[in-house]
Length: 307
Ligand SMILES: O=C(O)c1cc(=O)[nH]c(=O)n1[C@@H]1O[C@H](COP(=O)(O)O)[C@@H](O)[C@H]1O
Image (cartoon, rainbow, N blue to C red; front, side, top):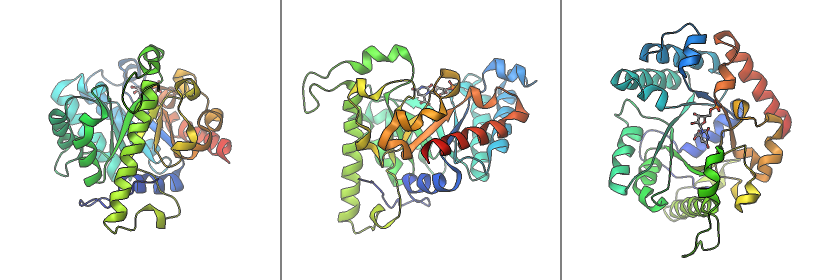
């Protein structure tokens, strides 16, 4: 069920904006990860200014080619306040270029602290305002309730880590829940259930409030999504792709981590149409002049695979 909600702020819901951007630009998400070695390769200083130039160049190269970019906050945060100022400029440039922005901040904490993160990333007056943010639910998705509510109310989106692309995560994410309504499921599948439940509840509220919602649109997506890495086998986790056809799926792991664009359909099955195919290093590996070509080629490979 699609949790389309009419936010009270200026923006339509994240899910509806993402669905529209998919229709227009395809499903590639270009990561903006200014690793020091990449700044060196690009002839940029290893500094906030270098990260800013790198980010602006990537935005310029992919504007009008892809729906969304994902700055990795860590690569800006490492330079302190100057790094955050650089990130603000990159977010603004992306917005001006009509690119959606996922702030890859991987926030996660108790509810009251999450509420403050929500102000940082979703409030209309915040210079860091993004379209969506990545979060960890290790303290329970319930602790993120206020964060998810603020996201919806401001037309923002959230991607909750569930089955991540890194091999170190397997033991934790494959562990079985031993009590409560999700007993017997893996931790990853439990998070998937929690997100689906949250989106369903939001959609029910939407219907009862009289908002026309997604049902009247040709295609829409929910606003709370999942991170499901492209390097894992979702069957191992007990995650069923048929449940996820309207759930945005952020799928890192393509390119540098080994997953192939031509495998999107096989990896995500019935949910492939809601996958954000995400790649960072491989998009920029050929240098500044190669970014647009890399984005075009990846977009085309994904399109062909899903045709
Ligand atoms: O949330 C993410 O984007 C993420 C989740 C995950 O499971 N694995 C993962 O690699 N990422 C991020 O995706 C990017 C991957 O970069 P590349 O391996 O260079 O494409 C990095 O910024 C990671 O922090």
